Amino acid sequence: MPEKIGVIGSGLMGHGIAQIFACAGHKAMVIDPSMESLETVPDRIWANLETMQKNGVTFADHIATIVERVDLSTEMKAVADCDYVIEAVYENMELKQRIFAELDEICPPETILCSNTSVMSITEIASQSKNRNRIVGTHFWNPPYLMPLVEVIKAEDSDQSAVDATFELLKSVGKRPVKVNKDVPGFVANRLQHALWREAFAIIDEGIADAATVDECVRYGPGLRWPILGPVENADMVGLDLTKAIHDYILPHINAAPTPSSTLLDLVEDGNLGFKSGKGFLGDWSQEEMDASRSRLVTYLLQQSAKGA
Image (cartoon, rainbow, N blue to C red):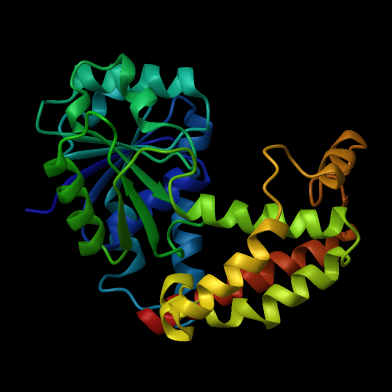
């Protein structure tokens, strides 16, 4: 019998996570105190599935059947019969701690409880709960129904069996889970991503190249290899003796500042927040340019999903 999945939060991540499990044949219960937000969940999932279908992604069931697997409630107790519960609310530590303490009281001991945080400590999130052994991290990437990666994070008190079971469940619904063995800020993928961003912004700070050039270097250089060749395999490929020689020379020159970029700080102080304000690192953004940027990303992700379908 397919597991029943509870999802706390009906926003961008929550409804997308529910969609993943519903597509795989699971019942999903979405919880949100806002009925206004909950009522939009079926239409949002339907629209996502239609867009995916139009771009070559196939499903085992009709869209209507998938959407019917998703139930809605404003009451937390509605997840009491779920096998897994995934919290997907905004990044607020006190809120997450309250939710997990409440879930710990509501759900039977065998229910595995997961937090979809991108950077926060799972150990700290679980700290107000009694049965911390069944709490793990599941960091889905946005949009969750198109991004394959899910980081499964073992907190200090997590049972390995809960981590392993969560990993296998995510594999079964078509995701690419990875196990993160230590609960550290940013886990794995965000640490890698923001290490690159730090160096990118430092290059701009130092006048080595402008923002557009930095993006060109990534897009048409190493970024082309990354979908099929990660940095560790790449190092093995070129030779670890060469890698060591390069690191001996270049690492002292790479930015290691523990504080944000000066250019980033200036932009934020001036109210230039990128798409949010219409101006950022790359200068002015028109609505048409912002729409085109978002469309390129979604089109690319849809194409990758269709290839894997």
